Image 1 (cartoon, chains in turn blue, orange):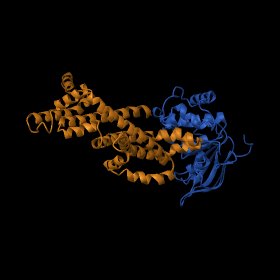
Image 2 (cartoon, chains in turn red, purple):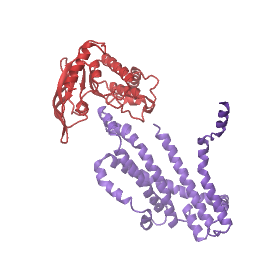
Image 3 (tube, helix red, strand yellow):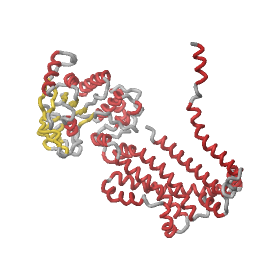
Image 4 (cartoon, helix red, strand yellow):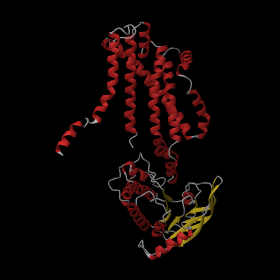
Length: 250
Length: 262
């Protein structure tokens, strides 16, 4: 939709404070359309705050933040889907109803089109047969996939993910990472992933932004490579990993 | 080996789950037996404490005479109407104060302080305003049923998980949809906590109402028993309150299990 060359996400001199505590200072960042960017940093560095700003959940900050060229502070601004660290599903709704929560404003969830779209998403995230299940019947990985499907139902141009895999076991985590890459590849969306897992960041993204310091600032932006699929243990990735670790002071 | 196995097998106790239900009956049954013995041996004179069986006989005779049904029906009716009135008002105000900080600041201090007025303190005022008719009793019960529902719903709505509210925010659900899909279902469990204790209080308040000004009802039977020195009637009325109090609690629990099914 937006003209080529215009960044999908642009953050310009962003500072955010909670009371006297400054969480982020002078963040400049831009994410190109269709790009996969990871944000890494120590816990408490403000990386989640950055995502919350982009999702429009923090109204009060200095500087600029825009998605698709629209200021995130606007009423219906920012065509973003958000996957939180926890699945945050509504326990009283079924999987299908939870996904339908993400349907864009003004969609009639009872319409045939909407139903078909929800069905498609249920099977896209590999939950065929679980459409009518309640969240309490799902495993952690399944619940997180419902959360992702809910984000996709919104048909976002930008998908924000806040450490979505941190609570999963190593095996499920790998599965979900591959799954996210598939989705990203299929739908040509822009992804901003916040994580504290450097290996994950390097394996998945085009670029990795390292946030460090107190308050958090962008220490370095590391280009990974364009080549995909990647080998997790490739030398170039290891090299990138070391560079990020150095930037984090590890 | 075989011998050791044979020895230990019969020792295992019968599965506890099957016995558990019955265990709750043991102590009350012992009390009834003790009660019977105390009256029969003359420790308590029958004009103070009747034999358990004569309580049952009294209730049975009154049922046969068609007398009891009327008393029970009017009491149940008062509780039901009182609950409906009190809880409806409570749902309105609880929702209002739960959703709006302004409404909460304006109204909550008032309700918080009036909830501490003892139930019986309202009786003279209500008698003066509404006479000794049905409205006075129903309103008194409504007052009792109001507070737990109001308090639990109001805090229940305010305590709905902020994480879930943010989900509604990110996906632009809008005010009405957020209420319908997130806030109200999230507050349902609290609402039922309120309803259950509200129904309990309604039974308490119906006794207060009927003891003081009634010509019919289970509470009236108690008072009648005192005036006529009929302890069987008093104890019978207590048992009826126990029975219906428990039945209504079970009923609400059933509805809760059906509605709050996640």
